[in-house]
Length: 426
Image (spheres, rainbow, N blue to C red):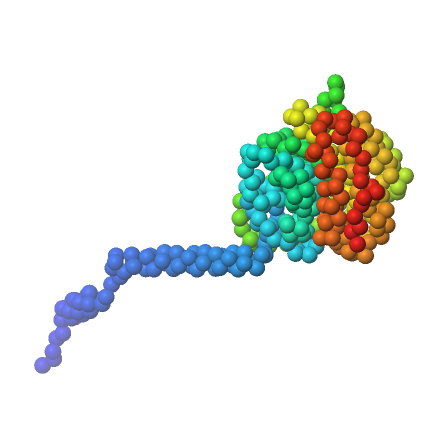
């Protein structure tokens, strides 16, 4: 007899068996999902920690190797740019020098704002020839002048370095007003290198070291301050980049390397454009001939004269002596002294009218060493070497000693330059 199978019951049995089998399989739980999310977060945190450790190791390595310390100035709306306070600087372009700027942003060891009793303070202003980043601090002529005069006069003499790379006389005057005056210097020396007049006029540029405010002579022997070019730079792409990365530029050696590469690329681009487009000039000022330079100096000297007079009068009102120092210069990559007879003559005329002492070491140097240099006294970048710093220090010390001992502006103005008592740099 045939067997009848209940297909309905069979299907139900299969369904129940399948459900039981499925229920026996392990299913994802909330705990498993949470564990997976935690693992991802942990992996991300671990990667961040590894990255921070790598950055820290690289920063320490760069610090120990003195790498990435090249940048030392930042944009400033009032003065154009200032020196980072307390930053360590390493310079390799002309020899090697490494030192830390003090808390006031000066190329000096740490110093108190209040003048110690019995101390004579000299504040020296100028550009990179004063800043002297190319030699160790102990070897620059400012430091040597302080040591020499202290021994000679039998009293402490502090020489404060207010030099900043590529500063103009206008910026020097602003640096005196915004910083140096607080130190109550007894004497101010304005260093005036050859072709200083090239920094008089405003200049549109993408290079921070060429960003300068200017002073125009106003009515009643006043100066009119103008920082139009500075404000334009602040609004430019490069200006905004420098402002937004200022903390990194001050504190990160890695960023210093990156920024240095960026500046080199920018310079290369500018120079390439200048070659391809003769009408497009890079951030520099150069007049084509001696006659043109002479005409330029005569035309715009009234601006320089007004700035020097204003600077001298403000110092006089503070009871501070004002002195002008003229120093020699060679252009970078050249071994012949730069000459500017008209500028030198005009400077001497301004000093005579103001009745302030002027030491012309440019002329003194030519008497001793001529106009050519074999690299002994000037580096490849045009700055002073150690022997040159020593020569400047010896001659400047000889010149300043009687000015410190003597009193009264009339007697100071009568003091003659020790041209017959120069010390050879060779």
